[in-house]
Amino acid sequence: MNIAHRGFSAAYPENTLLSFRKALALGVTQLELDLQLSFDGHLIVMHDGSVDRTTNGSGNVSDLNHSEIKELDAGSWVGPEFEGLKVPTYQEVLTELDGEPTLVTELKFAGNDGIRPVLEMVENEGATNQVVISSFDLDKLTVVRQLAPDMPTTALLKTDDASARERVDRVLALGADTIGPRCSDTTQELVDVAHEAGLRVRAWGLGRDQGEEMTRLLDLGVDGMTTDCPDILQTILEARE
Ligand code: G3P
Ligand code: CA
Image (cartoon, rainbow, N blue to C red; front, top):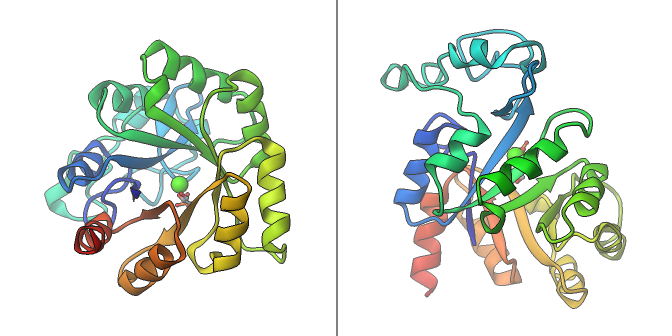
């Protein structure tokens, strides 16, 4: 499974509708995106807690209103040809990409207050079968499981000293269906223990120049990779078919 990280983010401004559409044009069927909450409670598609890096504005998303975020330019920081791109809301992504890809939706906002609005929006937009929820904040996944037991969830894991067994057990305890290790932490043992436990393995952290790492992970039997370069992974997958 080729999951385009923030869309086709190696070539286009991340987490924009352009980046998502360019990934889909490659034949990718899964998009990863990040959610923040604005001051007035809108679900904003952005990785960082601040708008500084990826827009021409400044300040924390949680201190800005939706209307202020909508005035920002989310393209120029990558290049003048992208000037005028807007920061999308989650609702816009669900509407614009209705019925198309699976949206791997990472909960980045602080606290748990935004979780119910996410699940309600997915339900109201008729996108229940189109969404996977992911987070590094494993408490959030527990809340998701309580509110929407059938929602697929991916537990993202940062590097730590835990064994493969411990990592898999941590994810099983949450009731998540997928374990999301960093690519460099993904070993044959982890893949095997996860699969024996009925978990899918989706590795993340694959940027540019990592074709060899993608091939290694495919050889291990991972079920998916989240990558800034879905073009490279698509080429590798097609060559192996
Ligand atoms: O899918 C996991 C990946 O998105 C994690 O890293 O920092 O890009 O959200 P980050
Ligand atoms: Ca992410």
